[in-house]
Image (cartoon, rainbow, N blue to C red; front, side, top):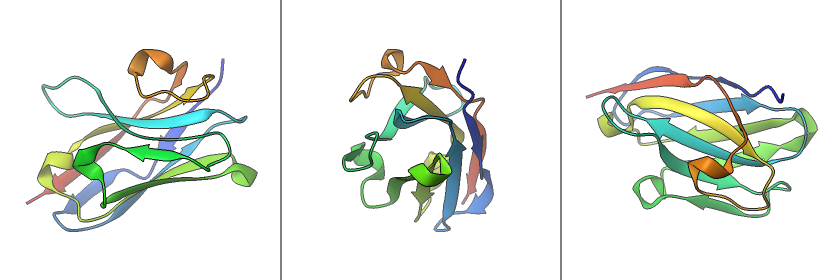
Length: 119
């Protein structure tokens, strides 16, 4: 079993920035998902194994940036211009596929880290 561990969540104000980190051993396609209260979990962003390709959903384009440091086995989600609607539990996940944006295509999941954005 591959252990995926997120960190960096917290309580911030609208307009603030926050960086989430995700530690995972090995080289996988990595994705960030989030689940807001009362909603289903949704895809946010993913990054290829070597970091040459990334993809963000439209709702976070221009505000969130996914990146990775393979030397540190860590993936990041830099979030800026945060909005109250970004409030959610953020999950990091690893996939053995070369590219994936569907939840079912990810094999290993972290426990999640809470992000709360106050207005």
